[in-house]
Image 1 (cartoon, rainbow over the protein chains, first blue to last red):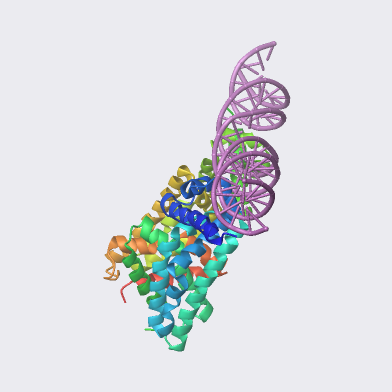
Image 2 (cartoon, rainbow over the protein chains, first blue to last red):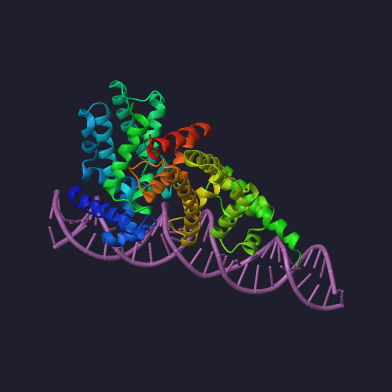
Length: 194
Length: 194
DNA sequence: CGCAAACTTTACACCGTGTAAAGTTGACAG
DNA sequence: CTGTCAACTTTACACGGTGTAAAGTTTGCG
């Protein structure tokens, strides 16, 4: 059934989508993507049922290309506050990679339930990473008394949101390295026992 | 020219828009607003040239109803870290008031330049408030050495963003008072000299 | 009476998404 | 060399929301 040929076109659509979202922004149209992939607009619908699913598939494609799981699991060895830092490094430096698609998905969050569900799923996974980092702090006896586990996870999760990254790096123009440093400092200041 | 009658209809549209955005969310249509105001959809266009301008006018209307300026200027008397707290109280407790319109405006940020400009203008004003609070810290010799004035303002601004408020109170379900307390604690932890 | 402002009603252009279906192309199986 | 099947193209269209256009209605008022 020609799976290698099929993959090639499908992949061309995915990477076109990816690159357009990175460059042109969240309002990229189906026809733009098709054009860039060198394919008719209808052909896109042969591979993806709708815009939301295309975007979702694109995130998965990016994850695969970036070994996302490996990058985000790399922090497992570290203990206590070191693990917190490792997680901030891993996730904080992964945000730029997915930012384009994230923006597009967020833009349709209010109108498209499928897009909302896809985004929520991803963010839940990130929250899982936050929780693991907090758990490591607890095990090392380093978590402030001011938070229980849930609240500490919420606080870290909010701190590391894509929108906060967007504001500091894009709106305020902070270099990525400054963003990472600031997040580590802030996370320590609010979460780690003195 | 019947300015009181005119105002009445215009105001009915504005408050309808306001309440619908608070209840139904950011995807409220022009026709919904018209219906709620007891007026034809076309009549809305007699008062506002387009959706963006209606939303902008609605924020101004809300500001007027809430004495926004007074609330946000109330912190002027306080000095140093007290002023920081006063600003967090004022702005943090004002966010819920404008959240509905903010969401709608943000939703069209990517597609409508007018909406983007209006939002940016408002957020610049908030940044001004952040800057004044940081300035108060500097004057009291209480700002950490780790930040210069600009960076400290950026950090506070990002911390107090509408989206972070949204995530903590809506997604995580924090009570408003917990949000305020957490923001004060965090702002102190990262900005105020020990 | 007659004008004018505020509004209604009807109609339509525009855009982007998604559906539907008939036509083209090329590989490969018998 | 022929028939078939999958991948893709082309054309056409329905839908929903925004915004424009223009003719009609109501009401107050000089």
